[in-house]
Image (cartoon, rainbow, N blue to C red; front, top):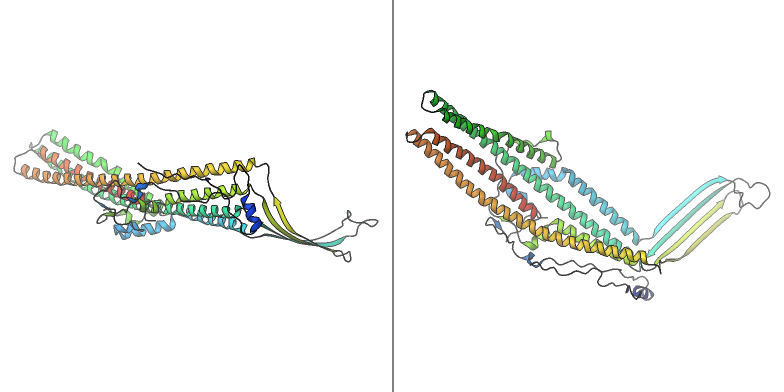
Length: 482
């Protein structure tokens, strides 16, 4: 049974009691004006289920839980073509380009949040020519004159209650979450590129075997037709041989479609058009394999690798920090301001004016804090939802890992059984040929044995494709090494 430790957001606040409205930070400000404090709860990483440090429940004999999954796991195939395909996909994939742009944007947002630590400045200057009748004290029309103005305004928010700091924290955590999303996209791109290449190779092999099976069926039909002409075989034997040929031929168009679909998918992942399919993938007729056991590690390593878990955790941290941003609005906002202004009228002798101002500005929504308290409640609810989402992401990661390992184990066992069936079908077909040559059986028995061999060979190749796909699913579920 999974046992989550409770994580109560907003359990304690360092600022004040909401009931008593006792501004402890304000008291701190009196003793240490610039020290300040942080509003809202301090973020703590939530706990994860206890079993994550242990080995996986599914323990196929073909995996090794004592070895960590390498970062560049696709190199375990030791296939130079695959490595080049993955390298190009990581450079040209459009989803990755979007994810990179999102990282740049999140960094810019973080930079904007950090600007709150520094004074805001504004400089203005202007020159004009005209007549100011409203300020003219003489008779008649005011003289036309040139005038110039200039000004400098500086404003600095004294972050006594941590609003700016919490805002910066939230922006930093958001940027971390976007970076984790980029890693998740990398994982998908590498996994699907590998899967598409493995599928294309497996379907290429399937087409080769199907083509050889068609040639065998055509040979059988030719032999039985010749025998039927001389009375050594019946029309029924001919029809049965033709049936076997037609069934074998019927599988080839679907395999071609599946082969083409895998190649088109591969091209799209690499940022290419369908007409730019890599030649090495087109001619591949043997899916790459991995020698030895798959390194899978354990549950704790899984959660460190999974980018979606990191992304959910960073979102929770950002939403927790935003509680502090809302809590800080309960307190006065203190801004230190300074301004200098200059006015000069050229046609009026001595008409030059300097003005300046310096001092703090305090703004506070007290006593009506209903809107602020509503914002706090919203932030706490969003953080609670993020916590639940994090726990769900953890459980989903563990579930996907176990499912992929179980599916891989089943695919491996099925392939072993199908290989045994293919070997026996080949032996039976060979024996049938020998016995037919000796005259002890009819050619019908030969046709049945050869049809069984054709089916067994096709099933093994299809099983190879399932094993290859399930192996990639294992790597993907384990977090891909990042």
